[in-house]
Image 1: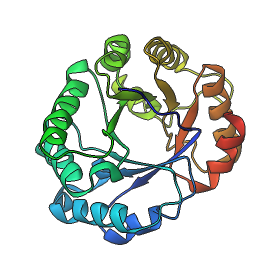
Image 2 (image 1 turned 45 degrees about the horizontal axis):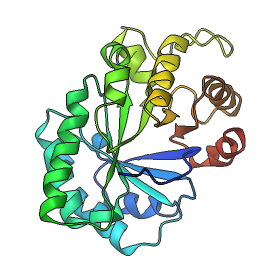
Image 3 (image 1 turned 45 degrees about the vertical axis):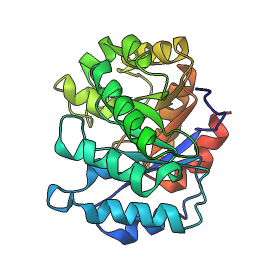
Image 4 (image 1 turned 60 degrees about the vertical axis):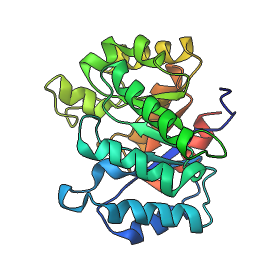
Length: 247
């Protein structure tokens, strides 16, 4: 399976709360990749309604971003499998990628890949859906090499510094300063695993830094210095900054 060339300098993650209008607004975001985050949907709203809203928007709206991705619910939850099944059946190749969050073991990537294989065999799509693995735990960092090599469907690894901090019992808001990167070991380990497996390496969003221009720029520069090819943000206003810094 050949991985198509693409740009992932600026990736905007759009949290969903269960309202269909949010998906429509996401279509207007001019980023390299827009990520519709089903994981962020409150439990009471994790129903077919939000997936149908995603499917309707992907199928009917003109998207400014060349790549549309969906972040799935956590593997091991009942919503994980439902997300994949309905996305393929309702949207097919309209969704370019699915993001598996909080990947700690290669089995989580394999579960998504095998389910996609089975569904796409029964419901053929124009092009297979790719996978990105979001790593944000001590166990995930230790297993970064085997995660990156888990499946030929895998297209990128993403470092989630906020979740990584929580896995160490540290608040993401406990920033030392804007110069020292206390996550340099984890960031570099994930980058090395990604490059060894010929994957894109993307820095995840930080709720602490997003929307603060100087800090966002400093975080992006740290990621670029570690070999990362792009960065996630929750703030569409940062797209041009990241496009400039990651070339």
